[in-house]
Length: 341
Image (cartoon, rainbow, N blue to C red):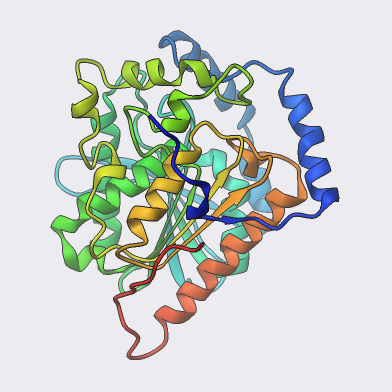
């Protein structure tokens, strides 16, 4: 399998100081163990540690004068926990957030720092989905949770009625976000309410893109050599051909009618080709802006670097611009442009 070309995305402009900072942090990452999915015991232990670290976590919200509401929502028989953070004034829009964690760890609270910034700068309410995890549920069940939450939000007739919606997803959450968008094509009126998607280094081919298959032992954060086996562990009983069916693998979906999208991936991420391939496909149907981050590994928006701060700021500016466009009368709901080069 040959790797996809890197010209499907803009190379993020970074000065030498920013690159030196990233490379210095990468040297620290190289000493840490890589995240692996080899069993169900380790993810349960990590999840327990995550929850322990989040005790009294609402204090961060309180410092900003914000609160989080926990509730269960959903369409049909699927009720899904969500965490809702609202702005102090009237919301201009809603962000539907899907957290990362390799499908096996994570929760809606873990993205509070990012979501607080979006609430404050973009004036949005954030609905973060606490989908089930794949330690006890098949990936299809996680997708069902996310679709149920999205259908509820998009059909809601009271607080969020008529507000433009932006979908945000990171890593496994990027997979779930795009799978949800593709599934929503069954309900064009609901899909039409979504004005954009912001996606960070998602997983879009569950049989593995070329960069996943070629990943070596030098990978950071993720266990590159074990990723193909990990994807198979998450989808037991399926052949690679079956794994490459949309929406399970969004990279093989039909993106006609999709909203505009902003995509980011790291140059050192084994999942790099997932984003590059998705940008190429999505860009045939809608406006896509895709960025390749030099020297950045998977998960880079969580790291204390200037590049990460700039990426997150650009994401918030992009969301604000989409909300502004949504409030402009007589705007066209259809966007057709090639992906950024």
